Amino acid sequence: MTSDSNQGSPSSSSSTRPAAKPLKRGRACISCRFLKIKCDGAKPICGPCMRHPKDDGCEYSDAQGRSRTKVLEETIQSLQARLDELQNPQDSTPSVTLHDPYRPYNESRLGASQSFAESSRAAEASMEASSLLSPLSTFDSPLASQGSPNTAPYLIPTASSPISGSSGRSSSVSSPYQNATTFLGHEEPPLPVIQTLLDSFLPHVTELGFFLHPARFRADALRPLRFGQTPRPTMGLLSTVYLWGAQFSQQDPLISYEEIFLSRALQNTATDLTRDHPHRVLHTIQAEVLLAYYFWRNGKILEAKTHAGGAVSLAIGCGLHRWRSARPPPMPGIGVVVENTSNVMSPRDSVEEGEIINGFWAVWTLHKSLSAAVDPAGALCGALDAPGILVDTPWPLDMEGYRDGLLTQDLRGSSTIRNFLSGAEYPVQGKMSNAEMIAKAVTLFHRASFLSGQASADMPTRDAQIFHSAFQSLDSLINSFHASLPSLDSYGSESRPRLVMLAHAVTNAAIIKLHNVFAYANANSNDLCMNAARSIVDNAQQDLGFVNPLMGSLWVTACQVFINEISKRRAIHGVVEGEESIWSGLRAGLSAMKPYSAASQLMLMGGVSCGLPDFAHPHQC
Image (cartoon, rainbow, N blue to C red; front, top):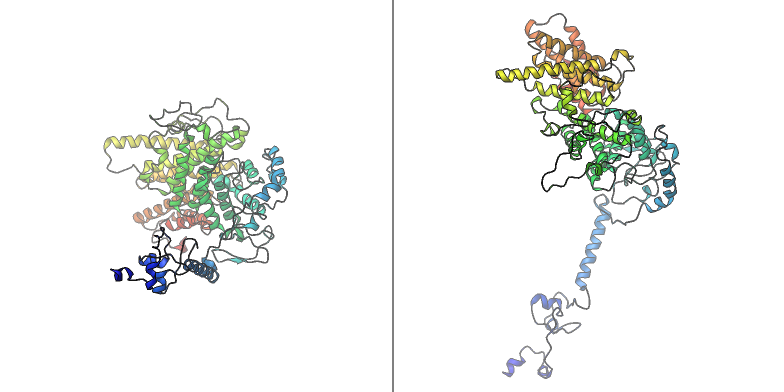
């Protein structure tokens, strides 16, 4: 018994020691805890570790804090991470020191912003807002000089520093970029670059569905306030305008960063609705419209339809299709809380209300033209064609009309599209605005494309009668609308208004879409298609500069008419006299697209998609 009690003792005198108190939880050394043996807690080395030395030393983790092993492991990990960072700086993410980049900016610009606010509307008519701003270094310093180290820098180089973009081009640049510093580590470029981007973009706004007041937009965009701060436009809209400005500028430093501008535009537009900006909804609609046209021009149809759908959803969700409706608002469903449109859109004057009205029609025009241009004729029903979507918004005016008070307080709309398609608006009373002309033209183009998709050789008698009635009604409406357009002959060949030319081209394309189904068998329909196609390509002989992406589809439509006519004649008669006039029309259509094929992927695709027959070799065109 005695031997049993003394077993495991270091000496015979251990029996005289007082019994060791049980250790508190967590007080045993790390080795004993790992091996699950009883530890006496002796320090610096406990009894079991003294009797049976191990590879790992006797360490405690209570009062000592982290064990020596743990400290060494963390030190090794830290050194290894630092070594990897130094060896591969391009793959590492260095630590970031947070700071307030706007503090010195706000302190230096507080007085300037207060004085600018007092005269904010003085520069609208003269477009001289930039003269109110002293040469700001807002985006050069402190913003540009305090870039986050984990953000790829956005360089506008000096005259001596070359720049290489994604396209591989390299060149030296000069003013206004000579003194600019890095700015793509920040949210927007320096002021001189912003002015260049705006000046490149604004001359083309009528072709891109831009419905805001251009002078007000420019003045607000150049205010000495930080990015996205009211009353500057939203971040998404500004980023999208910068994207278009870079594409229009045709200047190497800006074109090289087009992909980065695009990334910023997509990111900011997607998150603008979560920000506290009074115009976030209207500006997001505008940004979506501009992005849709951007992708459409570059031949990315899926992306274009996605952003067009976003604009349509916002417009319908905010009730823009019922703005100034003569009918009472619809009753919400049980338990459904409907946000008041006036809380989302609260115009301060007639010009801002005009922006809302024109905003809906810009969305309508984009949706109808894109759908008619790229979708099959039998699949043209979109969100704006859904049952229950009745458009009551009055037809748009030009901005001068809103400024001059043509939008009276008692003006109300009801069934605007339905009345137009029924012919109730003809004969036309008064002069149409440019925006109204384009909206009506694309409505007819879309309607003609849809109706042509319903034609079938084996329709039942009743369906054939309904189709014939709809065909006659739409044909009469197109002719009436075409006659109401300003005559292009009243303008010089070099001074024809671009939107009037676009309205004529779209209307002629509507004639082609409607009659092309019967052109092979019906001589009258064939003549109408040929005359409309010639009108489209003849008007393309003028140097148009940038054109609406829809024009590419219109030129393709005209070229298809000529190709079909040549194919039909050769199938019946072989090579016959009179072909040369048709060939000249085809050459004119292809020549119209050629100057734009380098800058617009859509035009390049259009030239290829004409579907030239085997006999139409390139050297013949």
